[in-house]
Image 1 (cartoon, rainbow, N blue to C red):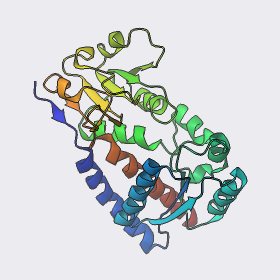
Image 2: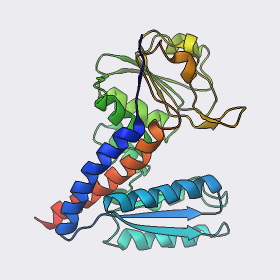
Image 3: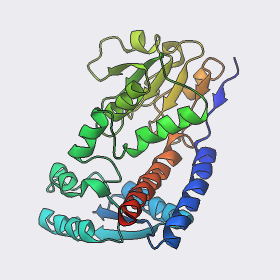
Image 4: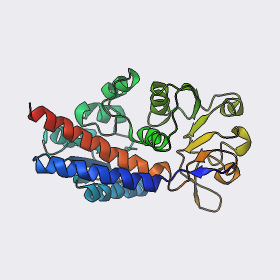
Length: 287
């Protein structure tokens, strides 16, 4: 079987062109989309992510505000920054880069963001809307996964889907989105007794655990679709995912590479959520 490699970079470029058109229209009407990104501390990986987000904003015409705060920033100070951004009409999306320093409550920070500006989709109100099938914003990585399936013409309706990993950021929302598209969904976690028995029955496998080669070629069936959300470094120091990419080539029908698969889509969906937020504001103003 010839395996189709799902090119996240190519799809991200295509979607960003569409976003650029929408942003141009909004700007012409006096509503330039704005995204604020806050980072606390000196986490090198977080700084790279934030830098990429700011660059992506510039590419599609989104106004961005980048706020870097020292590790010792108090929770109260961070909440004050969020309150200011909540009240700023130029800002349509707010993202606080995780993880935060241990002395700051992640829940308190996420709860403080205006749900209408929660471009990451992590506010409890937005999580609830997603769970009831009426999402205001879908979390960026799972939304990217669904966009990739749609672009490849893969309709989850009636398929068996297995999500490996039950995080609030990827696993749970990905399962909800697949469920809403008509898939029969199983969520596996670190307590799952026989992971392979579940993945072998799946038409679609989404793996997001952060463990190198957790899902091997013998754990998936012929013709399955494998979406690898993991980002790890192997023993040689090379970037890799959670699935045995090389071993699955020729067996699965579709697979995402690491890097170059889901990663570029995550930032693209963040931009999409910001533009969507700005469009909602513009629609309200036009009434």
